[in-house]
Length: 121
Image (cartoon, rainbow, N blue to C red; front, side, top):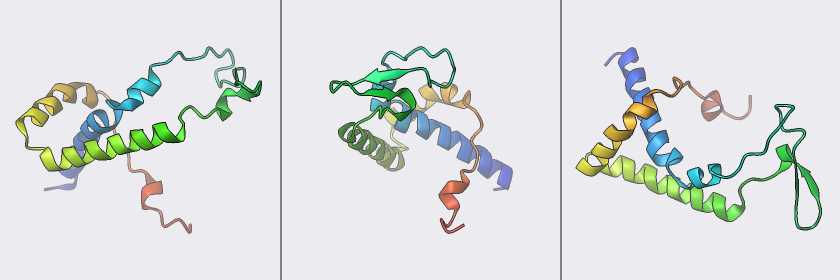
């Protein structure tokens, strides 16, 4: 298989895995809330007031707590595991085909150099 074919297949696989194993998870629930309005475009004009009366700038607000993060990551790991082990299951194949159209409209994936750097550079 040539390099172009490998890249095409990897891009298709990355997109569908992102759709089925990451996007269609509890992440959708976290994403579904009301989004604050910003007039500056960078949210520097948005603040959250907590129960203790602290006024927290939006860019500094944690939008997911430790429990939600742990549950989200476990769900993603479980879905990735299922995807790898059950990719030939007819029901999963049908789900892949159903979502493939939406996933292929996403931007072309790129190599993330942070994943392959040695960390000492």
